[in-house]
View 1 (spheres, rainbow over the protein chains, first blue to last red):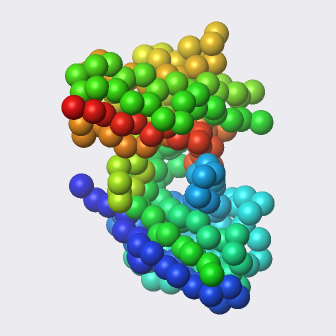
View 2: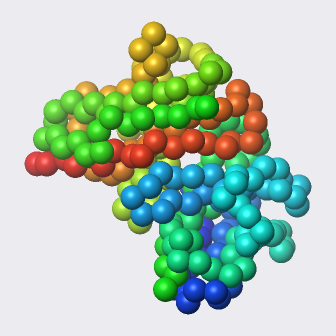
Length: 114
Length: 115
């Protein structure tokens, strides 16, 4: 079964540093998403991406965050200057269409900001 | 605003006994509701979804859920638990009948299955 692949599984960084979280969505999918889960809190939507532009973003997704599809296979989330509160599990997801709930999630990248 | 409340953070059952994971929702629209499961070191996997068709929804691995509008509930059940069912389960609502998958998650219920 096709999978969404995320790398790395764990990332440790110093506060103020830039990080890039990488995702390889399922190959024929056109819609891409990032969610995150801070320890002890709910999984929350960050951003959706289609046709090389952001479709929707949450209030969490401020100017420190950006997303990109640099080539035909990768989808990245960049945090420009990390803060302690960015420590979380970040999930990438993709879907073939806009049909509700047809998301396939990766296993996540655990980001720890020190 | 849409939300889901999972009534139990942890549920423990014995293998072979029924599973009940409870979820209540709040939505001003006719909601689309889902259950996702996350096994250790795995991605979130869709178990089942309700999108205004039949109120009893069957999913993978023998799970099912019933949409009850009068009770604003969408509880997940399975007649007989298996050791492999041990995982975290998320009740999820989508605020749109067709849109951008801006899913709203519950806090999760960790299911433990004992031999």
